[in-house]
Structures are given as structure tokens and as C-alpha cells.
Image (tube, rainbow, N blue to C red; front, top):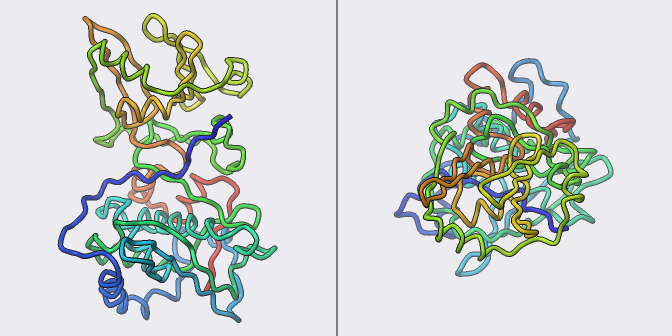
Length: 344
């Protein structure tokens, strides 16, 4: 059975014009970062609310040099990993969020990059990145186009080299904008390789302006879009063998299969199964936590949340930070049984 893509980035930043991509952006970013290198890049791992035990400190005898190789339109450019993390953070999270939420996001971006290094040499048996000089391949045409503010640089500098591991290996750090009140369980989505992504409550996400949304389609237009979606080869028994699945009827012919967090896993009509994420993309919905019904020749789709629902809710992380949680506690809340590790 096909698997859904997990790590999609929800962009909530507008690109600031006037900055050309490529080496110019890299040089500009380097000069901005310089004042913070001395002050912050030592990385005080013992700040926060007593969560120090969550860290595994690697040795300092060798330098770890990790670069991001960005395949831009004019060719390849080599970017120090921390420079790339700062640029990505500026594009992937609200810059006005609390510092501890920004720091948690920076760690997840770095973790995703490290998890991309080739399987045979991205880590030692202990999960250490020491002594490695690695190149991470990306294709990011938006790199270098966004103005990076001081708080973004500070969040990256204060978490330099910090990433999450699961069973000694760099772990992919999924994130999204706003939940429907809970995050999703990866195993219910047949993503067995991410056992640390379990469902947790996000009780304050309803405060987000992006928590509720709705879309209206004429019935004929709805039917046309539905018929354009390619169905899955799956049976109801395969869906229901997963724990926590509930079944709900929608309109006359549709059946919705929901996971334990109330996101739609599959939509079925007359034997055709479409994944919730496929349906979401086809109809331009903000998340796969949706309901729909027909009224007077129109189909009204109501939606909760913004994003795929796996991993860290950015809004939820910010609410935790506002209430006093540090980034270590935030990460340990959204990612179960992971270790927060640092390389120098």
C-alpha cells in the first residue's frame, strides 16, 4: 500500500523581494550571523526547565563539518548547515512566535537535514556525527530570498548542532502549522518507521485564527473533482485492521474512515478509495480533518487545523512556550521516546 508523504512544510511566510538567490544570499547571511557565532554557538544545553537529562553530549575531539548542497538554477552552492537552518526557519514559522518555539523548530529543521544523509554513513553505532564531513543534497529555489531577523538567528545560534535521535539515529522531525486539537499517530497512517510520532492533545490550538475554515463547491464541480482523483487499491478490511479507526457516512454515497485524532484516512464511494490527503489536495483544504454535506445543490466542506497533523504543531508549541515550556520540553512532548543530541 502506498504511503503518504510525511514531512511537508506549511509555508506561512511571504517571500521578501529584493534578495537574489545563490551566493549573494549566502554571503549576506554569513555577515549577519557573525556577531552571534561568538556569543551563542557554544550552545548552553542546560538552560530551561530542568530537562537537561534529555541530552546526549557527543565528544569534542573532532570537528563535524556538515554542508547543504543546494541545486540552484545557476548551479550548486555549498551552504553551512546552520546558515541553511536559519534561512529555512525564517520561511517555515511565524517570526513573531516565542523564542522557545522558534528554537524547537530550528532543531526539527536540522534533524530533517541530518536524517537525509546517506544511510551507510550518516551516523556511527552510537548516533554521533563526530568526525564527519558530509554534504546534504537539497533543491531549494527559495533559499536566500527571505529577510532573516535577529530572533531567528538567535534561535538557530542557541541550538547550534542540536537534533533529535531515535534509537541512536537522526530522526525526521515532522511539523505543521495548527492541529485540529490533536496530533496524529503515524502508525494509524501505515507509517511504521516513525514510532515516535504518537497522538498528543493540543488543547489551545482552537485559539488560532487558522483553526476553522470552510469551502463551498457546486455539486457538479464537486463531482468533477472527485472523479479526477486516482483511487487506491485497498479494501475496508485493510483499513479497519488499524486500531482507533472509526467509520462515518457522508452525503448519500460517501464513507469516511477516520483515525483516532479525527483526521480522514480514506474517503470511499462505490468501492473507490481516496486517501484523506489526496482529497485535501484536490479540494484545496487546509487539512484532512474535514466533514462535508450537501445543501441546496452545494457541497459545504468544513475543516479544522492547518497542515498534515503529524509531529509538532507550531501553534501548539508557541502556546506551550508562552506558558513557560522550554524547547526541550516542547520537543519531548511532541516526539515520544526521542533523545535530544548535540554535535560540536
